Image (cartoon, rainbow, N blue to C red; front, side, top):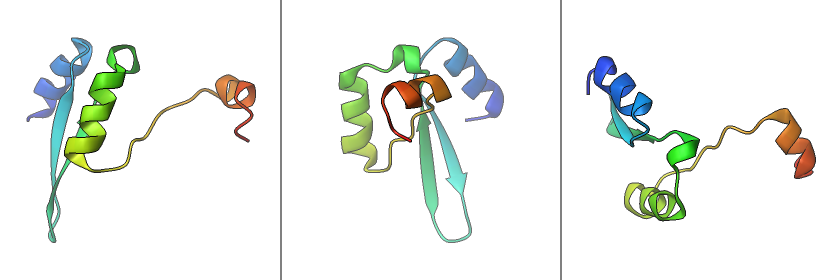
Length: 68
């Protein structure tokens, strides 16, 4: 997906997929705005993509959850 399409998808609060072509393997990165992330969508991403889920968290939220 060209980056312009990715930006359009992201602005529309939809799931976007970026294909990453390294010399060793082809990988995909799935990105969704947090406001659009439902439990069902997160579950589908984890089960189908079988990858790692990364979440951006503010420092205030980290302190509130006592993560650090």
